[in-house]
Image (cartoon, rainbow, N blue to C red; front, side, top):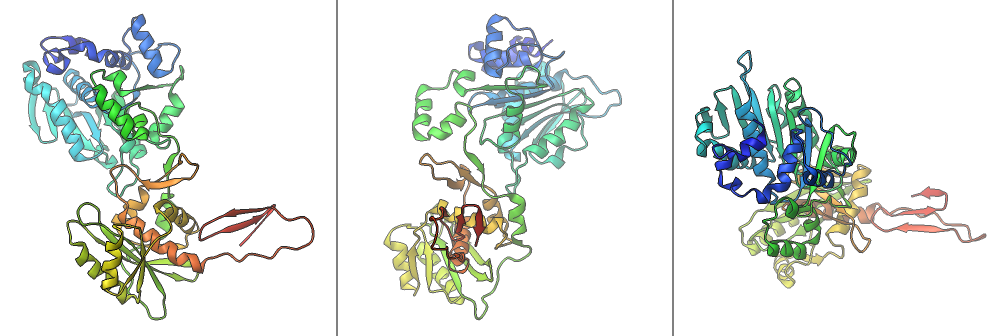
Length: 492
């Protein structure tokens, strides 16, 4: 029995309400047939060619071993992943030596993995008598069958899956796999899963909505999509194509509210012009390991930057920095987590500033005169920054790349800095911001303070130009680390 027979069988998957009306599953059925190398009719062949960019359908015996499915959100991919995992687990044969064989579902974190497993993968064992009879025991994140197969959910931690043998491994939302330190985990996760499948001939199936044109998902798409000779099958589709039951008003609202997210999360397109802002190794080289804060020193001039908050959602953050020769050093970084009283937080922040002999703090234009008045009440002059968030980050970039910036060893700060992304703006000006759903309160204040002290200390020395002869061509790039380039010559 193949997976399509099981889905249509009235006493197997076919008895589940989600598969009662198969008219909305047409394209997923073609996808499953391709995964397992089953024959396609002419209509199904057209669907396959449309979603894979290939010109022929020539699957290996048993189908492809590595499959990448790139589709929008709410397309049904997580439910399909769970169905594949259950089918593979229930149809597997007992290992001759009695060792465990795994059917693995991997998600961004344990909560997401458990949600996918509990709500989708366990449902057939609760509703189908034939499946329930095969359960030996179960826990919160694992279900063991009588045939020795363990259906288990894992977060995206490569070490968690090392040393096991798997019948199938499914990755849900690979493009968003990141560690608790905000380091990319997509590449390492696939490297850990492939050996688990090597001796079983099992399938590695990735189902994910896309993100930027970087990372493992993008590289797999670029290397294999539309290639008839590719050993990896790449399937790409929009959410409405894969799930025609999506409401039209939901799609229209998505398109209007956030066109960029609509193209990625609904149309399944990679976001162009999105890249990681800071090189992670270079950033780590700028960290003063083990140093959480530096006490004020006599003879040093300190500057400060503040990212205020109203006390309901975002953190209120404050950073203090000073110049040390050509380096700029972050001395203190404080954060107040909501809920809090903004007036009380400003009083505490003012007291901290005075310990560093700082009587003027820069920050954004939050809440008009309220923040200005509150700081003034405590003897601190609050100056609204002329630079927006993106400009501050772009000024920080050369300080990091030249390793002139020195960051405190604060995990939350480093996590935010690693998550910053650079996007190509529609006006031609690049924009730097955090990922959707993330935060950058700490990194904004730290970058603001470091670039403040960099400005007057690290201005370049401009060599005078000879007055005779034609005027040289000058190319000017603004910022605290300006460079003046004469045609064919560079100096600072």
